[in-house]
Image (cartoon, rainbow, N blue to C red; front, top):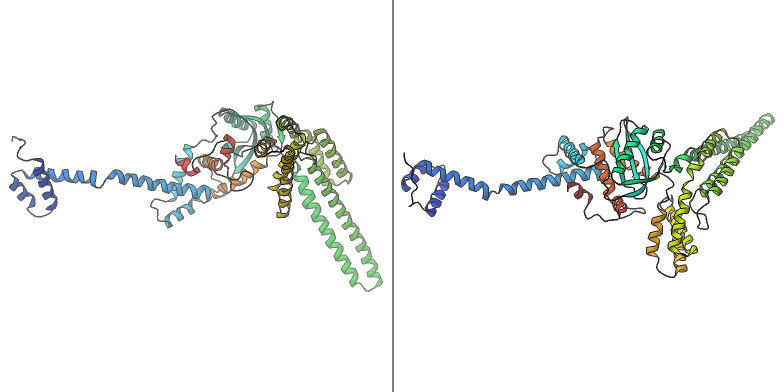
Length: 494
């Protein structure tokens, strides 16, 4: 059968046939009547109908828009998942329940896990640098079950430079950990950490020419705990027993009982006085040691490390003269490592000399340094009274420096404070970061993955602090000295 294109069936006629086919679709005999009217085959009519349906799906329903809406919904669900997991620190089961309540479609625990894993794989376990930077490393290890997690933080910005699940925490693991950091242009000026064996040995192998400084908090933790808790508790216990003996003495009636209870009271009174003296003396000497460990003296100049060492040794000798066995062993351990512990004073002297060439006026520099030291104490104050005192002192010394120089020193203050922040005494900031990570480990019940750690690292480094000296700044902004243009969630999605 020969098929020919009929010229009399114009485009308008064909469109009209198509519309009639659509309107009469499903009616008995409609397609046959339409074919007879236009003298065409029923197949031709059905072809027009099928073409209409295709056009309808392609243009009228706009499946591309539908797909776009689905993509937007998926992105919105991903935002909710990331916010609840990282900002809210919610377990995956809780995230699923919340999303279901809010009416989102696919929000099973398996789907949420896969989405988190997807984004975690896109992120690196090491911070990517663009230009060489020299930083003080703060390194520590935290455990998820039996798995060690190695973490290194920049001492100034608190940005996480690398975080990884390791097979072990021996020196070789730590050495490889720091090598990966330096591959990304973050080079070390030194390390501050606790005295983990693998950590110390690894750093000496990795960079033997750079200083290793033990953390002051860890060095004096046991000594402080013994004095402030054990000795204080012993003193209160002795006082309580003395009071008890006194009350028993008051109730005594016979001479024999009175004499016996007098002896008991006198002994209890002596023991209480001895316990109080032990606590008071050790407490005073501990405060004296901590005062000497401050970077600047009360005159605004860096404490001399030789003088500091002598003062601390003298204070320890006085403690040891009381011959308390719980103290003597701790003191010997601290004295053996004292040179390492106080080497930050050498860095302080170098920074101070550099600042003098910038400021020019030695008295003004002393005042700004005192303001910086009091300003740091504000964030460590335990009471509102302490915080108000440190705030007033910091403001006073800054105002005094401004009066000496005779001009607005806002820019100078930022410069000096920034330089002084490079003097690192302890690794307490990495402990702070560890406490930030710990809730995620607890929520994961120890089953942490590297993808989750990558997400935590990115979130921590790109979220803005809401309080403290870094308020309003994200760690990555402080590290790179540039502002983030988007929220951390939008950055992950990007």
